[in-house]
Image (cartoon, rainbow, N blue to C red; front, side, top):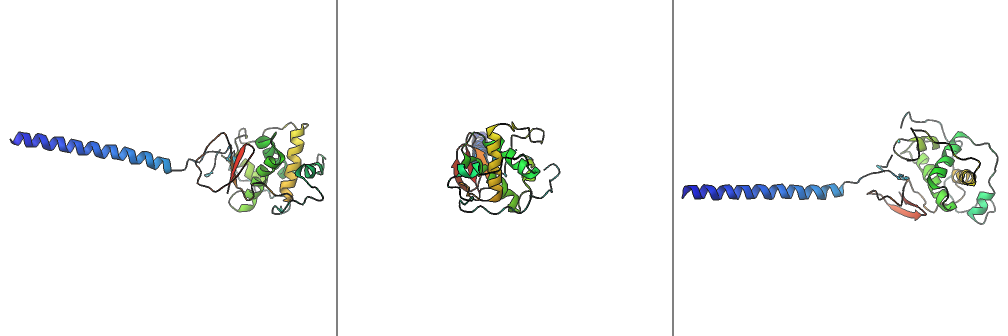
Length: 216
């Protein structure tokens, strides 16, 4: 009789242990679902690509942005009626400071071939970051910050095809983004990622423009 009682008790204990193990595994899976996986942006993409992000500080760049870029305003680039006209109105000379070159390069590598609005949205993310106090205070500092932009190669910006139309557009958009003379379709965005990825960011989604999704 006693042996039967001992056997029943052992079975009960084993059952309880199995239940505990299974419960722990289930809660662990749920918990992992709740942890934001901050990828990149190929951001982040942001991209633009968070986590706050995704792919760059070697030595932080302390070079200041030339002047103080004005916040984006309602579309009023001189007398331009469209963003395309505003781009056409930009100077085409080769004088481009290092900070605007970093900004133009990011626009070129992240959004070349997209609409002008899509390129402007990407450019304004970099401008917004430089003014936010949460990121480096220069365009080059923002672009070269580790784990943010996937187009970097060995922590450096690769060379662009500067004789191409894409580069000329990127430079024009960089000037407009820097001046804040044309409103971004993703106003106030600080992060973005390519639509081909799905990072689980706990951020406020603002807009999708072309091949990028933007967040604040």
